[in-house]
Image (cartoon, rainbow, N blue to C red; front, side):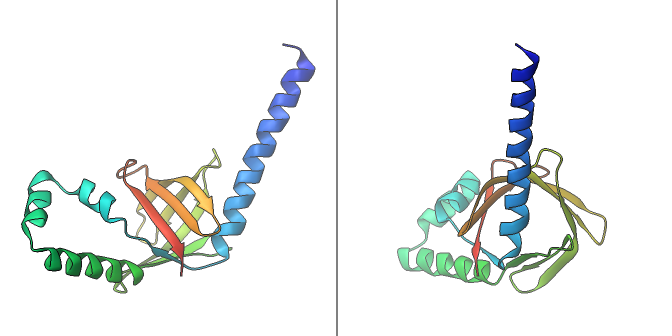
Length: 149
């Protein structure tokens, strides 16, 4: 491979990285985000005993529990500020604050709470109406979906 071709490839990969970082930086601040509950994903996350117990409930009770989970999720807010701070309120009760930064790969966000707990999340999708990420620290297979409030 010639030096010119290699230089072009390096330059293009840098541009892709820079544009991804810029997209994360711009899109994430424009709005407050709330959790979106996917019941299929919630069911998959349950162990077999929990799934069996849920399946044995009458349909009206299942529907009531699903609505309660959705209502609780909508009370959870995620806010990322341009000064690299964040605030997360879970179900309107527990509030976590701290700092965040974009990882060196441009595809992750590293958040550190005021208490010093650090979490690395993988950005899987970032669109104007959806932010999908998974915790690399906890469970990379369990997607968290946020939508604008």
